[in-house]
Image (cartoon, rainbow, N blue to C red; front, side, top):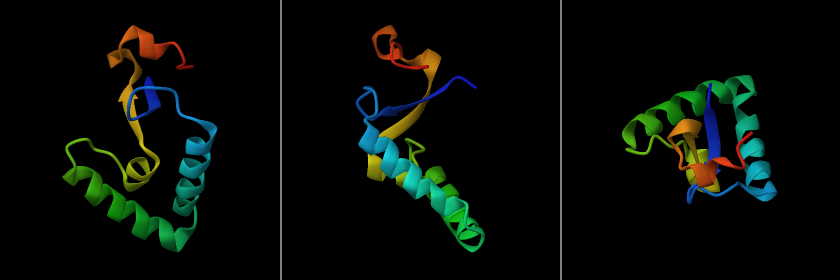
Length: 78
């Protein structure tokens, strides 16, 4: 799909950032919570001009198209 998850400043995410992001995303797997978290997150994402989820805001990450990044920032994308 060509998406990249980066820190907000365009640098590579640290292991700690990935751990926090993964633990928060696990909430989407638990059925009763997944409906609530999913619908709440979609509503909040559509209201923000950056289209960041609550998890992305808390961690300090952003999802972007890999091809839209400057070449210097693409070197750590796999």
